[in-house]
Image (cartoon, rainbow, N blue to C red; front, side, top):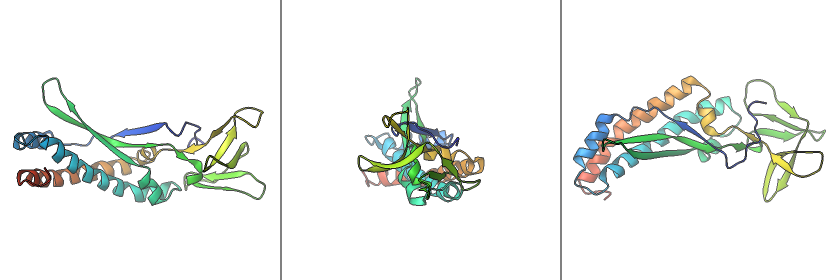
Length: 203
């Protein structure tokens, strides 16, 4: 049950990555692209976009092996986030990570049994849980799993499973692989992006 929450769907989870976006490569991009307006932002941003895609691809198989969510659902609900921070010294650093909102419980292995009870399994390990107080209903064009807050029919709260960053960071081996893949892809792409801009492409 610890994987089930009634947090609002607007509640976003953020997982920061301590990815070694090598300071050297950032300094190199800043130096080489000094004459191109916004060049360093374009080069690093493009490299990070590729790196984020590689990180999500590396995560989707182990995550969907552990959680009862489809790979397409995992990818659709995972957003990468990166932004530049200008240090007091005048230098630049990059904050990078993944974010995603908590996911409706219906997107996991959830069904209503013959007795009208909601049965759900968020993780593939262990057994399914029967939610005695929950019910499934269509509300506002969205089918979800809900619980009544009090004795009356309303108000109700929707139930959710974890956000994708929580799933990605629940297993240390998966975390290590994501960080390795992101860092490796970034390092491979940054020189290519710098060269593209120096040659006049992508300006």
